[in-house]
Amino acid sequence: MTGMDARDAELKKELNAALQARRELGEEYESALVDSFLEKVDQRIDGAVERRVRRQLAEHRMTVARDSRSPKVTDSWGERFGFGIVSLVLAVPLSAIGGGVADLPGLLVAWAGIVGVNVVQAVRTNPGLFGRRRDGRDDDWED
Image (cartoon, rainbow, N blue to C red):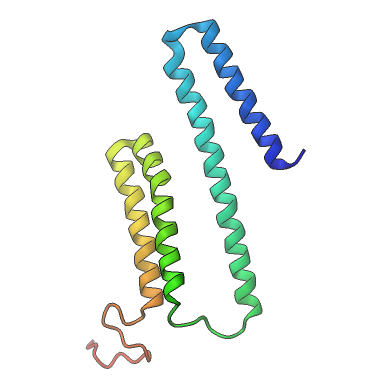
């Protein structure tokens, strides 16, 4: 059994246990049982996202370490478009988790993070975005 199969079996066992507990305890505990199960699902999703991010970060670090030249100043349109799509796709579960855990403040923190990541990406791909020159000289800036 692979790691994913084991986690699927564990989640299925948790769902069956929640359903059995609901049958035994009655409808008055249904909400608490559903919340408990959904929390376990959220934890599983968070763990999967965290593993993917760590793996991608490690792959990126290996690529940068192997490639001694500096990264491109500008990325292709496809990379920017892909980053935007991924950002929007990840915004949905992050918004749900943030809003579900901490209501409006949690939602605002989630979106602040989303906006922050996109601003950093925009500055990285467009060095002159906020008035800085691409050649690295700061002739326009006065101290």
